[in-house]
Length: 431
Image (tube, rainbow, N blue to C red; front, side, top):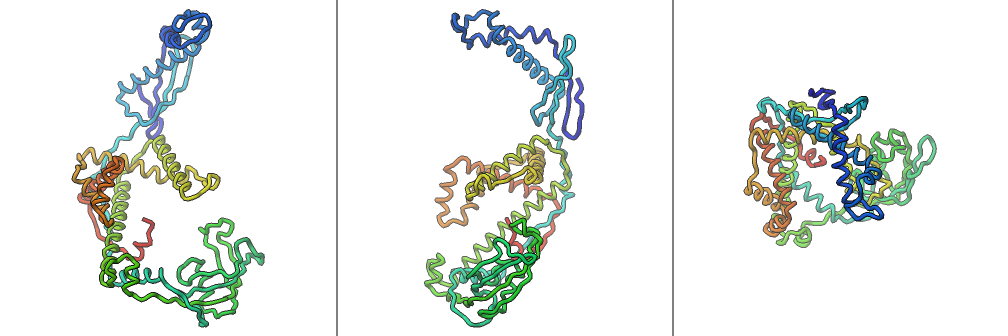
């Protein structure tokens, strides 16, 4: 019996089931009903066969037919050594004469043939921490504790301003486009760029019309790409006063000895750790992108479909925890189809890579992984003890350790070229 290629990984087989074989199995199926049939006047298990046939004959025939279908399809799978990727969909093609003719439509697992890893070229991002980066981070910590004093000077970056504004589109005011005594800090990019630029240089009680174009990705869809005019009136200005790096201030940041040198050292350590983490994530992404690029692979649609639903479920649960109401959660398959296909494809490729190269994870690998996770905690030993107290966390560590081994294996066998990445760009990425 031949297996027909439909398209990509879809396959179809046609098989025959004799009607007399189905009928011959009906009594055996009826016997299964006898043990649970409840008929007035008869004890359980003692219902006559003719009564059972009237009550369950149709069901028994259907059960018998399904049993033959499953058995026949299993024979086809074993005979042709089919690696199933999805449950078959059975269709009755014909029931004429003494035979049933069925077709089974299903998907098979892809045959993965990995390319030579030496053909891969991978960008390895590199970023150096500078004293200026540490200084800017320290400045951010000071800004978080900044105070403000009234000023009669023109507005500048870092000033806290209070304004009234009225926005119009095509000469008409619109919902959400007006406010009174609205406060924000210049330079923090909480307002649209043209709006904020229009406030810079104003004096108290000065008014100004500012032209603003809403971006195409603006959160309110009805305003996207629309031109608006905002009449802005400055009500007050306050200058930023940063706290001095006193012992009290530094202790308030969690530095026990209150010393500026210790604070700077901790900032340096934390930034270095974060940079390394981000570089590792970017390198991993570049490695996997390179693996995908040189190993095009058809993957089962059913598997991708299942992954889409898994992603949708996880996203929905996450949004609920964030406070979204069910009616606010509007997720579609298209939102996840690209990422789901990418993830499924990578799974097949990585599984093949692990199998071909016998890559394994030892207990020591897991311990190293957990120790690395514990590095950012004050009580590392307590964190490690907590981590090992849950089997699911340990399994997660194994997964991360295996992922690291696989990406390292690929990088070790590929052509790797270092690429400089700006500190600011690296820290702004959503990683």
